Image (cartoon, rainbow, N blue to C red):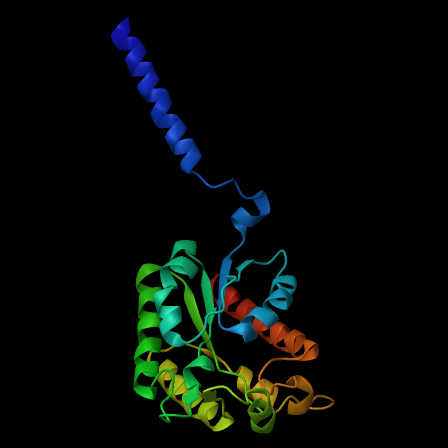
Amino acid sequence: MTHQLIAILCLLSVCATHTHAQSPAPGKASLTLPKVVLIGDSIRLSYAPTVIEELKDQAVVVSPKPNGGDSSKVLKNLEAWVIREQPDLVHFNCGIHDTKKFLATGDFQISPQQYEANLREIVKRIRTKTNATVVFATSTPIIDDRALKARQGRDYELLNSSILKYNAIAKKTMKDIKVPVNDLHSLVANPGPPETLETLLGSDGVHLTPRAQKLLGKQVAQVIRGHLKQKK
């Protein structure tokens, strides 16, 4: 009898442990929807709410709270931000922080060579550890004079010429490894009337205005929707 009681108590203990280890059950609708992860810096954080709204009832959109920062930071956090989620699609960007050019040395925060290597490794890890479709987004432009005024006193500068240089590296890299590109830079640089570059970027010459946040969010959602249909 004692042995039976011990066996029963052990079984109950195991069951309780597994029960507490499980996440709360999601709603029935979310079980059937594809999962999308958005990765990027503050630009991504600003358009993410529009993407979530646009894809409501079409996809579960995960947008990590931390600023993605540069490509090395994205690589460092891939496990937490992407791989654990096991998404169907990853829409990612890194570039603006990589192009921070330090005034004292003239060096970039992440060198062009390291930037390319990081991009390749990010895509490789996502493809190796998930079944997700990967989409890369180019970095949005910078208005130099606004950015210069906003960053007076800082030890680095942000220049649109650097953005163009790193976007070119990213586009070539993505072409080599067969990753589709969502060209958000062109959308902001040449939006078409009534919008202009000046109306889409704020006073700091970097961050998006509310109008731009919606514009980019809609395009990101459209691109994601198209790739999810292909995947299905």
